[in-house]
Image (cartoon, rainbow over all chains, first blue to last red):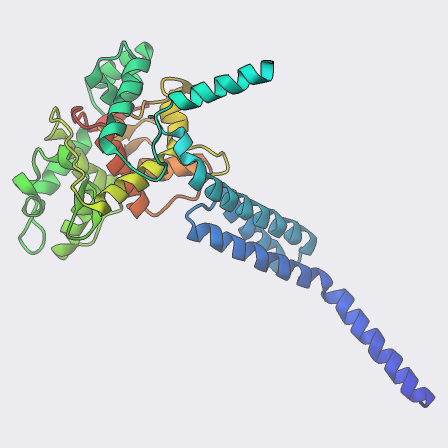
Length: 103
Length: 280
């Protein structure tokens, strides 16, 4: 391979690496938000959504739109955790509620 | 040896409990158990007095309530409701045309299970359906005009004994059971059920308020709450209860809300209508 081919190849690899590095936080947030949103929708469908979940998700979206990706990522992960906790609560209660019945 | 004694003890306790499949409902047995629980726990409270909620639990609150009742804050709502009942819709019909007995003295029969539609119909739902069937826009379920209408209808029914029926229809039993499940299910980030406050903690304080017992809790609705600075319906109370435990509320008159109203009102059968009421 000729030198100028090697130089062009090296430049192309650098550009790809740079692009990946710059897109990381935004992509990470987008992936986390998608997971949180899916979990939140599942909680809503089960009628078990918590208020803090909705707040965290909204705050994550707002932070993401403002480019504050570190904050947005943390909020998205918090929203996902809250949504999953509410779903776990509903599943547990579906089995356990009868223990509280007056008999 | 100790372990054997403990195991024997656990076995005996378990054997002493009446066995009932978790997925079956027995409204009559549950009614009796519910009644027994509250009347034994609060043995000094006359049965009919349970409809007065926190005022049956705390003498100091009761005195304040009696003073308030001299000039009841729900009076304006009753007057407004009476006027609305007397005012025809644009098509010439009126609320009385939608209800038995012209809507007077019937609060004690709600909610009921509509076997044609296969669902629980509450008074609030029936009123908005009346409006829509007569070309009028529905009201917000939680306050203002809806509260005024239900306040008037409750007032005309004061003293009548609740008589909510569960017809011999598996769908009615299922609605009752779903309401029962809703009542006992923990929800929200604070992980409370309706029973957490109104069964286990009935008569106790939560912050400055005394928690009303679940027995008869529907009887005084709608209520003027000092906390709200205005009237609120059963829908409003259910929505705010959900928010207070950090659960996203359902839409007013959601099927689950109607089912829990069905269950709770049935549990209060035989108690007198006391609404509209005033609460802290």
